[in-house]
Structure formats: C-alpha cells, structure tokens
Image 1 (cartoon, helix red, strand yellow):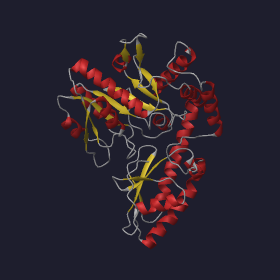
Image 2 (cartoon, one colour):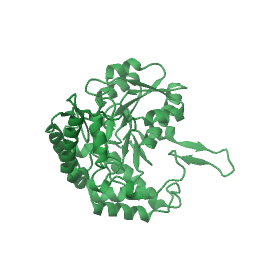
Image 3 (spheres, helix red, strand yellow):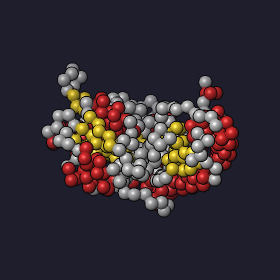
Image 4 (cartoon, helix red, strand yellow):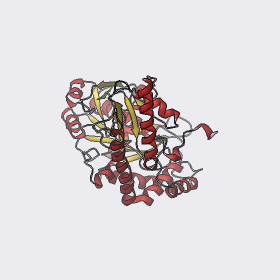
Length: 393
C-alpha cells in the first residue's frame, strides 16, 4: 500500500514528518505501545497516564514562559489546541465581558483552523492585511477591534511565511483594550526556544509576554512525539473553568471534560513524556542546530541557482523562494520537482515554493539542490508554466 507514498525516510517530505534518529523513534514507539490500549479519559483507572500528562504539561510550561499560576491541557493536535483557545476565550467573554457573539481579530496569515473552530463555536473572525515583511500590522488589528471583539490571535511563527508576528506589540494592544491574546506557536513552540539558546535572534513570543493569555504548541512537530500530541497552555490556570465542558442532566451522573474529545489515546502522552525526557535541553538544542544549519545551507544553495531568490525575512524553519527570471515559472519548477519525487508546497501569496525544514532534510539537501538546479534549467529552456495548486502542504 505504501509503494506510491513519498519517501519521507530520504528527506523528500519537508512537512508532516518530524524525525531525528531511529533510536529516538524507537523510544517513542516503545513508550506509545506501553499505553496502546489505555484511555487517557480514565484518569481514575489509569493514574500513571494522568501523571505522565501532568509532567509533560509542566515541562511545556517551564519551556514556554509560564509562571506559578500557569496551567495546561494535552490535546490531539494544533487544531484542537486552537479550538480550546477559542472556546475558552468565548466563555470568558460571555461571562466577564457580556458579549454573546464574540469576535476574533487576527492577521490574514493566521492558521485556517481558527475559522474552522470559529464556525463550530459560532464566533466571527476578522482578518487584517500584513505589513510588507509578512507580519501582523498592529495598527490594522486595532482598527478592526469593536464592541464584540474578545480575542486577538497572533502567530509565532505563521505557517504561510515563517515569520513571527510582533507579539509584544500585540500583547500591549490586548491589554489596552482588555482582550484575550492567543499565540499560535504550534510550529515554533518546541524549536524556537532552543534556536534562541544557540544564538538565533528569536523575539519574545511565549506566556512570559505581558498580555498573552494562552498559547498552543505542538509536541508532534518539533517536540518529536508521536501524533497526535499538542499542548494548550494558559497563563492563568483559573481560566480552565471556561475551557471545561460539564454536564449532569443524564442518568449516568456528571460528565466533565477539558478537551473536545471524550476518549483519548494515551499512547501519544507516553511518547511525548519519553521523548522529552530522552532529549532534554541538550538534545533539543542539537536538533535546533541541525535544522538551523540546514536552513543556512538551503538559503545559500538556492541563491546560487540563477533566477531563484529566497524571500526574506525568515525567522525560523520555514522558507519561501521564488523566481526573478520571467522565463522561469516557479510553479513549473515545483511541478518538475514533484516528478522527481520531492513533495513540494506552493505558496499562493506570494507566488513561491514553501518548504518547512526538519532534520531529515539535512542529508538530502545536496540532492534536492542538484535536482532544483536541473529543473530550473529545464523550465528556462521550455518556458513552461506550472499549475496553480490551492491545496495546502
């Protein structure tokens, strides 16, 4: 069945897969299988699962700027974490601000799962244009705030362009207007702190920034845990009362849940705990070094190819590159790279190739750049035009 899949083991899939070493994968798999059958909903039956979950959350809070009052929840992925952020902010706005139909204001680059979640929750979303550097424009955000606004949403970094929104500025704006600020660091949460530790200029973005109420960070991305694993963290754990679902009008008694799910897989929790304890700061720093070194090599390699340009800025692990040669269509290059069995993402605005780096890309980079250079020359000679592909990779 897998014969037609892209060869992620050979670094040909620059997203979806987050792999460091076979040994770390073994640790993750063995921990997962220890809890293959257990249900994380049943903390009374499986107190060890609850303990693993608590310790993973505590490690996440410590890494991402939470203080003594912070709390969190282990979720199935970034979409559920973002859903819970919106749900919590909605209930907070209803009870604390008297807003029946709350609204979210965010930059156009914020993740699509915000609108997905808002559709389920009966909330409205207003998206504002970006600055020239692809970051949220704080003035435009403020101009979109009205009496129904309860939440500002920012990205660290945003998936479309790989840059950090000005979190400190947006935090100050949230405090000025008494709004909830959620920071989506699903991509950067378990990479950016370690990139900063090895010397990269990562801006402030986490729970330590004044005005930030909540944060989402995916463990199954650069945390290298098994899918699905993410954290929804709160600067003040008291706000979990707005997150909870409670119901007692049924014959079985009271039902309480902190997540969208009822039954929850315990395997990803065990995997996350094992991987985090195996790697520690030292291991995560080394992974950050591999990824950021690969980023620098990719930038240099792409810009050595006549007609291509890396689009700046790029703050972390996501890069865009486009064509500055009118005879070379970047989508045609992407299509030809696909025929060479590289999974290539197409950015719509700007028109570019989108690539997210992980450690598997490092040993494959020379082959990638050689194929890329060959594809550029092929397109230059044929002047072909590629297909517009609106699917998100």
